[in-house]
Image 1 (tube, rainbow, N blue to C red):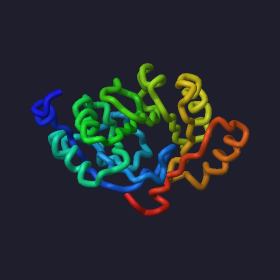
Image 2: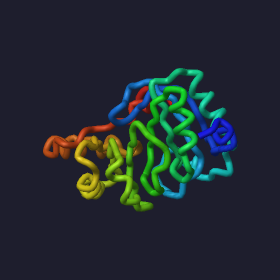
Image 3: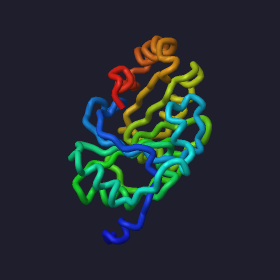
Image 4: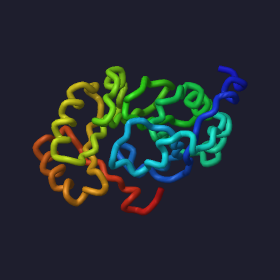
Amino acid sequence: MSDIATETMSLPVMESFYSLQGEGFHAGKAAYFIRLGGCDVGCHWCDVKESWDASYHPLICVENIVKGAQKYDPALVVVTGGEPLMYDLKQLCAGLKRKGMHTHLETSGAYPISGSWDWICFSPKKFKQPLPGVYKKANELKIVIFHPSDFRWAEQHAKLVNRECKLYLQPEWSKADQNMPLIIDYIKTNNEWQMSLQTHKYLNIP
């Protein structure tokens, strides 16, 4: 891929920032986040609903997105949303990798995977069914527990991912106090699962 091709690709960026990964397998690691605007999954408990309408966010060329990440020399770069796979991410991934950065993706799996990723966090949602192709590529399955019925939802998806995929249950933030004891009890009797907490919210960091 030529640098000229990379320069011509633009994506709607809601925000980008350097922080710690707060969730899942890589929690606690320094990470540069690229949050793309645009999402049609429509989780009613979403905490970044301002990301949904892509037209609200500036289009930034891939070259400048990569330069923004490169300034921090991060251990990893997390591309999130919104739903980032609404866009073809091959050029963004290639640009980041050319600069030696590890690429992580957070997705609901509702769109085909594009790009070359070192880690894929797959968090399927009931509001828009995931595509079959994402299951075998996922490194991490993260199920948000909002209602007790979500445990059955988690079990359905755990049967479909690859055997090396890490399994996480994460309490939805507004119901964390209510659902945390349920998750603890569930994991104690289903120990293939682990707890994922939104530690960045406890630490009050982005």
